[in-house]
Image 1 (cartoon, rainbow, N blue to C red):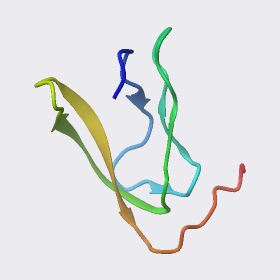
Image 2 (tube, helix red, strand yellow; image 1 turned 90 degrees about the vertical axis):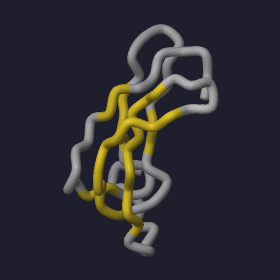
Image 3 (cartoon, helix red, strand yellow; image 1 turned 180 degrees about the vertical axis):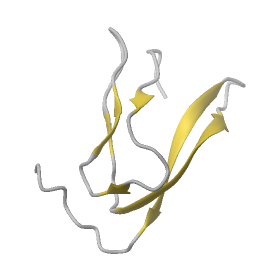
Image 4 (cartoon, rainbow, N blue to C red; image 1 turned 60 degrees about the horizontal axis):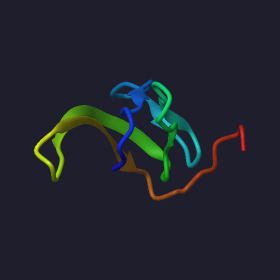
Amino acid sequence: MHIGKPAIPIVKAGDEVFVGTLIAEQDGFISAPIYSSVSGKVTKLSDYLMYNGATTTAVVVESDGEMAIDESI
């Protein structure tokens, strides 16, 4: 939650991610890249209703319980 532009997801359903995998790229001056905090599989990208009534895209990751670190780290 911030005043900037939402990041743009770069993963899709079925992708495997790890702790530290880039899942969304920044999109503009006030924006931030988003990294996965768990390892597992992306199950879906869906609209998410925020507290202010606006919607944004959520990346849903089903954790595998392993907390495997991305090899780039």
